[in-house]
Image (tube, rainbow over all chains, first blue to last red; front, top):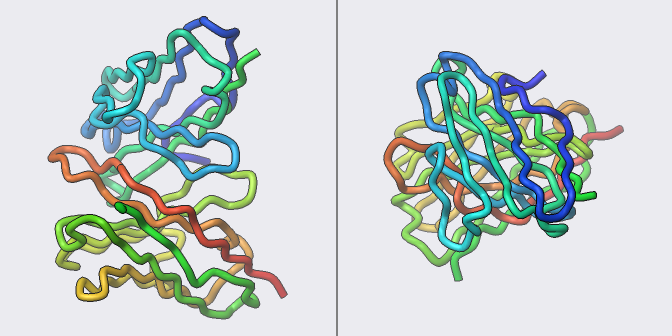
Length: 110
Length: 121
């Protein structure tokens, strides 16, 4: 059971917009910034969004992040087949004194 | 080239020990915290441990506290994870990852390719 809750799966057709939610509590998302990672099949994770809504250099602006209270969301617009993979949210938890990940959301492009 | 390269994985019996290494190159190693993150086969990511640049701050997940020890040698630009009392649920691909140098976030901006640890009799 992950500290951060994500839906196990999400899907969309090419060109669509999908969102992935991440729910936490006051000891993690409620008091910290949220990061998102993309893991394509057979590869190491890659950071996608940091500090709630900041995109690293090289990440397309189709990817965006937001946070409100104890929840965060990752939005992917203009969905492409190469976006298929697993997406994880993460943040620091002040009670556990460690980084916590969501359980991951498997994105399927139909 | 900026990279992290893990090594030391293998097959070990329950109760056994193993030491993982993460060799770093291409950036000022002393300035960054380094983490270990693991992924059991077919499962999600689990943060294991982190160590700050000067080794002042060290943290562990509850699942490994008392069994795993993280350390670093800045002269060798390497981070280590000494694992004792290994159990079947420690079986995973172990990644080392760098914490981004941006205030207010603990994001991992650089990852290695991982080293596999299998605990089996």
